[in-house]
Amino acid sequence: MKASSGILLLAFTAVASALENGLMRTPPMGWMAWERFRCNVDCENDPKNCISERLFMDMADRLAEDGWRELGYDHVMIDDCWTSMQRDKDGLLQPDPKRFPRGIAKLAQYVHERGLKLGIYADFGTHTCGGYPGTTFDKIETDAQTFADWKVDYLKFDGCYSSAEDQEKGYPLMSKALNATGRYIGYSCSWPAYQGGLPPNINYTLLGEICNLWRNYDDIEDSWTSVLSIVDWFFTNQDQLQPVAGPGHWNDPDMLIIGNFGLSPDQSRSQMALWAIMAAPLIMSNDLRTLTSDARNILQNKAIIAISQDPLGIQGRRLLQEKSRIEVYWRPLASSASALVFFSRRTDMPYRYHCSLDKLNYTAGLYEMYDVFTGEVLSLPSHTTPFTVSINPSGVVMWYIYPVARPTQTGEERKYPSVRRKLRVSTVRRGQRNGEHHLFL
Image (spheres, rainbow, N blue to C red):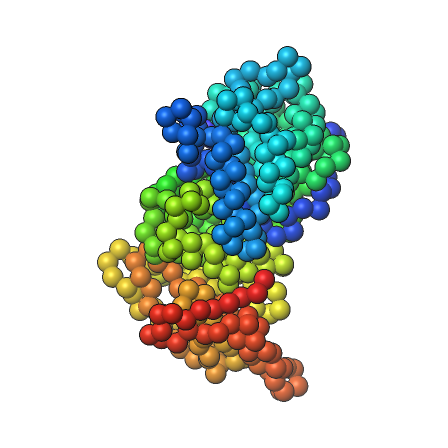
């Protein structure tokens, strides 16, 4: 993504109509090619890893056969570098004939037959970021209809090689054009990332009427430094960003890189937990064919997915930044539940962090906490009861918290189901290695 140097107040023009697709009431989930496979078009020497129909069919097979689809990972997303270097004689985008010999419509059919959805990439500008044909003003309606004719389900619309002034008009025009096709196509806008990502340059209230999700910040790289830079930017600016997310319109901090080369297991758990707290799309960019069991277990963690997909759709916040370099993040969930993440920025050794729910502004009552990574359940007789969590360097402890009883105005206690009943889990006791926890979505 190449950021525009100009900053412009985003004002929507009369051409913009609300995005009336009813899609993505919870953050989208799936798999995308870019971070892991980039613009590798060398199918002659690297046929398994180049941007081709083979790659996307392989990933569709893995999503359908390895338990991903049932957990909600139901999108297979093409990114840049899939087209020929020229449009066809009728001015239509066309896939590279050597790498996609059967065309995108056939690929969409293959994906749909496996109960999945197909996403595709285009760029509002003269060229894509990788130098392939872009979508200029005169091609917006044409390209939207082409994607609909191919039965595409999702469009990522980038913004390389376009001006701020043109983006102001072009992104709403594509929203209108997608609506006009009559096909429900999720719409991901990269627009805010090109304009600095923050109000007043970005009018997020109006953006939410145009796009289902949007990239706000830099592209993720396969490194812990990159993950931290994204986390820092989103939570430093949480007062502006947190209120604008919700069902059908999400902030997108970019892809999950779990299972690649840059993160340790603890850092992988941290990315997964923090993305769930942010109500972020869970879009993996990795090689599903070669994932380790550790990476798969993190990405397929049912409790974290349920937190991510909570129907309230409220993005979480950072509550505390301690001098000990421990941070606490919180997200409210449906049915009076919540999620807490205790995150360590330390690099030395596990740290024992002492806290209480009262310190985190929880109301009086009896609570149970379910540790989403260990399956252990902790009961607290009061919100003032102190507790201690041990957090690994660059790691997290993540709790699903549920009130078991809470005083009412009359002094009586309102009873809630236990966390075990709420989550339908079989808990893992300390020291058991083969225990399992199950959350039915």
